[in-house]
Image (cartoon, rainbow, N blue to C red; front, side):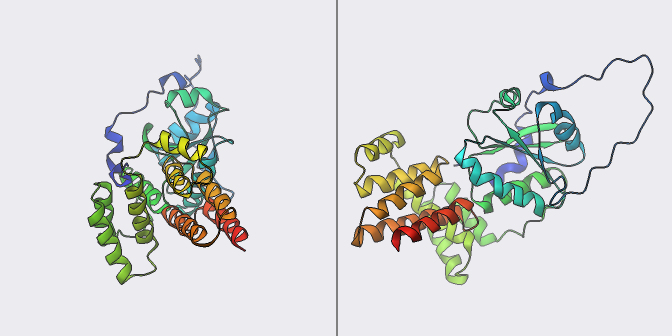
Length: 303
């Protein structure tokens, strides 16, 4: 598990080589008159907080724009279900940022040369570009709190004051323990926060991640999914398969798996599945659009 709070150092990893994509300036015998760079339209709804980028516009909209404003690239595709979880969060945060950073959305199917240049193996995949230098930010779907931390790290690296709330040192300590694999210490820290602040959603998500990490410790994901496929009514196998799917960025598939299982069970088994599904919702956080949809499906299955 990667820690998004390490992202201030992402620009020390080496830039992506995009030299083949840069468009050389056309030769001319007459020097072009000096002009001032055009002012960017204001960011926000209907403005340029979120832009669709193609290979033809990549140099101007991403590389050149990043010289003054950090750009975050969201590599996505229409068929990608995890992308449909991540993209709305990124878009909302970009609008919230009010022009402090720009979200550039790149469809990998329509722009294969860009995907190849960035060595995209799976999506969603997110990069940051500062001063014309791209570097990987994260891959897959993260909880919104972690995405905010990653974006704030980009802004800090670019010398831009972020809009994120000041970090809670209690939460920082708990997150550090989780990322270090010290699950006992992480659980204790998250529970302490919740005892003092029962509505703290970040602590709830952290505690749910501890439970998820414990359940999948030492398992073989391929074998787990194969066992679940062969035993559709084995509740334990289905619960573990849902855990694997959440960790692999296929949360919507995990939710559907367990909602369908709720429909086929009753009594204590149904309640166990319901509680397990709620714990997976907590991992993603309440603002995840896939969670909202799955909650409606769960309510329909139960009632």
